[in-house]
Image (cartoon, rainbow, N blue to C red; front, side, top):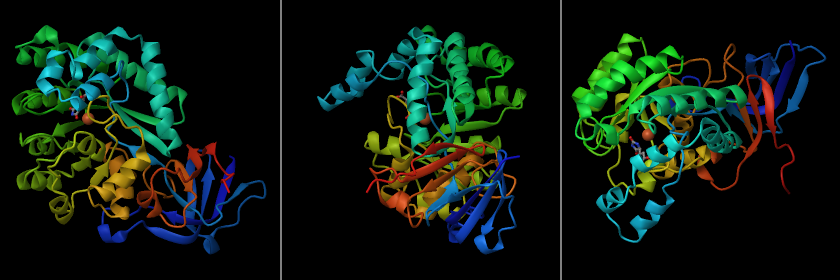
Length: 413
Ligand SMILES: O=C(O)CC[C@@H]1NC(=O)NC1=O
Ligand SMILES: [Fe+3]
């Protein structure tokens, strides 16, 4: 099988990054060997075993080689735009006025229902391409803008099609419990039953679901309704995750931990009890600085307490048209440090090894023999520069499943 030898690099292996003091798992003057789709070897260059003469050699010119970035929380497939309500808010309209004018999640639902699968694919492919340009090699995509079986499945089919046509891994998450559709106005329990008895079984039957999520919130679904959906997911042996404690403490994090959930996401209003339950269950805390910033939130997630408890922290874009219309993974690294005060080591772990854990997979997220060769070579001298600067893209080369699919070797100047 073809081999590629990347040498003259600083490896940010991200191994043992769960321990904050472990840092980036740096290997100065390192090298890495790709064979087929996997990492065959990585380590100090002076320990590099003899390689075949026909191996492709890449001189990293002293740059940093890291795992590809993983965006573990996105709503990437949607139709329409919410720019008008963004403008209405800036002109002083209240949420109620916007909602009464047809704004909010349900306006995106109407546009997503009206769009064809091809139209949704074309829109999402542009957003995915932006993330790929940023060094993303894996992402999660939720449904949740259909709120009826046909459109929820349409969104999930688009997510599967993105994985089949672009150099990126995609994990799908069924989020029909994102908002209450007009058809079930004042009958949220009826909608939850419809989700559990009709929508989820059909999505599973079509092989479209990797995990199940719920928006557990006063303006979303109750803890009891969330648990009803979790039980339905359990019936299909599907892992769960949760939009939890974004606007209030609904004790959602403890609930998803009770179900050994993959992650609890947002967490601005997370309690000590929720943290303890997450630690116990190994549930990842996914923080979403883009939504915090765009909504001008003032309540910070309890980051020091999560850190002290040793709960793994992941970072994601939460790319969606309402609360985080942001498709820039490098900006998330920057905001994780500048807004949430994560160290660069924590921020990069948040978009590599901890993000992989939030998706329930251990095939990527670290530089280690046997893992998928999803890598990025950065034109930076040290990994901290990925969090420090914003606005220039230091990506030089990107490998997905061992293939170089993005090459910016000609650095300007
Ligand atoms: O406004 C939207 O379109 C989605 C908002 C997004 N969904 C959720 O559960 N929390 C959010 O911030
Ligand atoms: Fe979200």
